[in-house]
Structures are given as C-alpha cells and as structure tokens.
Length: 459
Ligand code: SF4
Image (tube, rainbow, N blue to C red; front, side, top):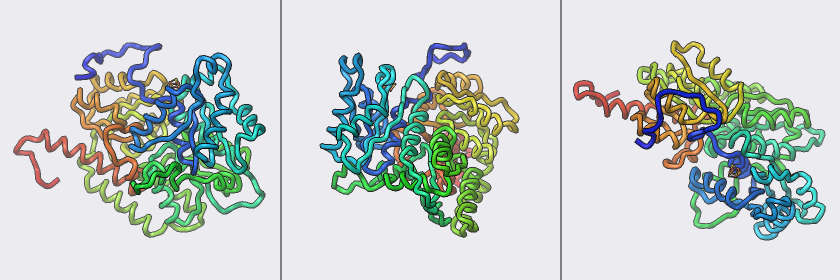
C-alpha cells in the first residue's frame, strides 16, 4: 500500500507533478553519447548532476558508466563555466585518451547561459583538443523536455559531424531512437539479412551489453565511429525511427547534407516492423529474404495461437512517445485495449497519433503527454477504470502492487530486472519476446486466480 494516498477523484494540477513519467534531459544525451565509439560523455554542470546521470544509466544497464563533469562550484555558478570546461577537456584527452568527448549542458549551465560552441571552439584554438580527436555537444536544459529530448539533441550533435564529399557511399543512415543495445543489434541484423549497408547512430550495442572478459576496457569495441558519422553526409538516405528521438537529426542531414530522410515508427510489433523491412527492401531494390519472411511467420503464428488470451485485455501504459506509439499499434493489432496512456515527454502530436491508433476501440481511451502527465494520474485513471495489465518501467511496480495488476517491465528505466540489454523487442524476433512477456504475465495471473475446476495444465 505504498501509494495508498492516491485518491480516485481527479483534480486539475498545474504546479505539481507526482512520480513523473520522464527523467532529466542529460540522461538521454549521455545514453546517446555512449553509442559513439571511444566517446567519453561530459556533463557541463555540478558533480551532483553528473552522479545522477551516471547512476541512472548504471542502474538500468548494470554496467559502470564513465563520464566527466565540469564540477561547478559557487565561482563557476556565478561567473560561468568556461574555465572549468576548458580544463576538463584538456584533462579528459590527456588522462583518458577518448576519441570523442560529448558535452551536454545541465539546468545550471543553461541558466548561466554558457555558450558551448564558443567554448569548444576556444578549446580547439587553445590546443586542448588533440589532432584527430573531436568534441561534440548538445544543449540539454532539463527544465524543458525530458530524457527523450536530451537523446534527440545529442543525436543531432552527431549529425553535425556529417560531411558531404560529393560521392555517395551507397549506405543508408538508420537512426534507431532510444532503444536497447540488443535492439540496435537486431536492427543491424535485419538490415544485414536484407542486404542493406547501414550507418547506425547511435549504436550502444557492444558497449552496454558487452561480455565480462576479465579485462577492463575504458572504451569497448562497439559504437558508431567518427569516420562513419562523417560519411553519413554521403549516404543515399536516412531512416529515422521515431519522431521524438530521431527525426531532428534526420531532418538536419536532409537540409544540410541533402540526404533525403523518411521518418518511421520504431519497428516494435508486426505492422511497424513490416514498414521498416519494406523501407529497407525498397532501398536495397530486393525482395524480402526468406529468413525474414520466416521470422515474420513465427510472430503471426504466436499471435494467432494465443489470441484468445490477448483478446480484449485492457492495458495501462507509461513511457516515451516513440515507444508508446509503436506499442499501442501492436497491442491494438492483437486485440488488446490500451486504455490509459501517459508520457512525461511533451508533444501534442502524440495524443493525436494515439487517438488515431485507438479510434476503433469501443471504449474510452485516456491519453496525456506533457510535464504533468505523471504516474499519479495514471494510477487515478486505473482506480476509476481498472486494467488487466500494466506495461512500462520499474516505477510502475508500486501501482502494480497496490492494485494487484501484473506488470510487464519494458522501457526506461528498468531497475529491478535484467534481460532488456540482451534480448531485443524490435523486429519480428523482438515482437515474439514482447508477446512472450505479455503472455507470461497474463497466464501467470490466470493460474493464480483460476478456481480448482478451471485450473488447466495445457493452455
Ligand atoms: S539539476 Fe537539472 S540537469 Fe541536474 S540532475 Fe537535476 S534536472 Fe538533471
């Protein structure tokens, strides 16, 4: 009964968020930066901010996250952080020898008004950036947006590295959005099967899901390289997976490097994966290979075999817009009813997309996405209209416990389970895993609640 004070009646709140369905911008920027090979993220602000950003990612990935901080004290807070950042850039390249430093701002350095491009330019002119090394940046004031905005801003910072050499490289840029390292691996595998050469950025596979080898590597093997990012300006096209996380960078490449872009949903579920595979197929000018068709067939088979258990089950969702849009489409396509949906990331288009996707459901759908769209509100909706299942991050476990509703952990952050680093939920294979998780939650609950007469061995 940890949330026993949540009332059923909803009163409008303007200045209070309780259990927000989002976290701070720099966490997204830091996660994205880790998807660049040899990159050391750097938090331009106080040590406390950086400690929080690192620990949020460490708790989710169960991996140590290295990052620098400008270590603001009172002096930097009043007079600006230029001297701290210049010193930090010098120290990081001297001591840790990264290929890239990815600087993001914080609430404090944004409020002071520190000018990152100017400071980084000065660092270059002062000789603090060694030859062949790079500094990329993103402005991530956390009093607007969310971790999703921060991710998007840093990915756009990567796109600024792209150069146009005049000769197309025959590759396709794929901007995967905020997905797990295992999802990035799966996207690369699918593109490989179809025969499309891609530049995937960011790419955290091999960095945040690597093996325990007994040897510490400050910079693991994975990640998109700077050479690949430069070459992204010569790609034949860009597929941006997700409007919120990936579209800005794709449009930047379209405008500045004349690389045409297409914005798709993250390939979660049957229809979104079909659209992604189709886009790759058209680019490659090939038919979909038998192996991919086979995987699709397996997903369709599981949907039809177990449809009776999905049928008209109601679901409440909390998470990030790109993921929730694709997940909602998937759930509706298997006859589940997502009826309460919140995202703490603002964006009016989100509500419109969800309403569109759920338009044929014969029930009311509550959806909200802004800074006040919190898990408190989701809990209130659930008290008014209970659901069969919750899908979202670990913070939903409080509602799950209080209302006795099974929870499928999915999204960010997952602090109390493992597996998300290693098993994808994108693509047809990922769809199978997601369905297996949903089905297990539903059937475990059925086993628990069935009477002895209804208790079945075979389901
Ligand atoms: S002060 Fe701002 S940047 Fe720092 S941890 Fe808090 S929300 Fe994030």
